Length: 252
Image 1: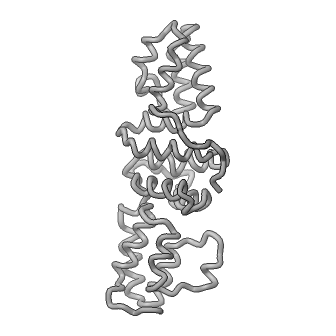
Image 2: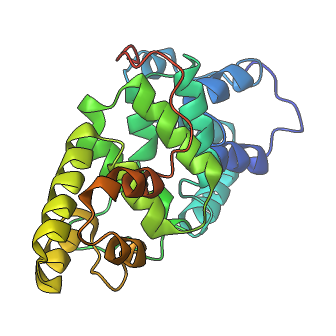
Image 3: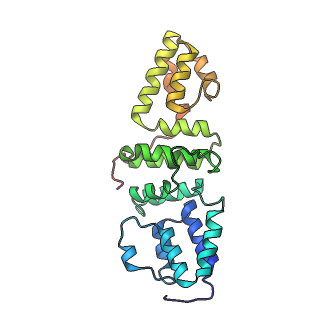
């Protein structure tokens, strides 16, 4: 131990762990912040992707068994230990600025594993954060570019407070999803397909039916006018300003 300061209590460890789990501090930031206070096992630090919460818990255990028990009690039974919107924004900003890697983002966002027979509903306070962390990022990780991450950041910062609209906008950041969306809707409004057909598409792509589709009124209004689809797409994507940065895949 480098500095056995009286200020280092179990609360110190609990707040650091919660900051990481919520996302308001990255792994790198926590290691930098604690470098003068804690001494981590050098062998553990050499392991790629070592869980920073494990490092903190082990450091607390080395200092005091009481600290360890306090951490277990406060973390295991606390509702505020899941990724938050502020945490997603902070991690995306850190990624874009080069402070963390794509892999760092993935490891943080997906630390809360949901078994196949479990439901995550109600665990996360923010449905869009849940969708990004547990579904969107893991499924599309390899194809996401600098531009995509900036767009996701913009989407979270907008905070439109409509999870269905945010989910659709996020998925449509992907070129293949945009083309699929336009192709289906163009065919739908030109050929007057049934509501059942629309429901099948919306459920498969976005997990909703026409009754929960937030742009149903706009879709009905452009029936027979495929030339108006691009304007609808722009509205659905919630992206009012073009990306001004290079769209290269330089994020590692």
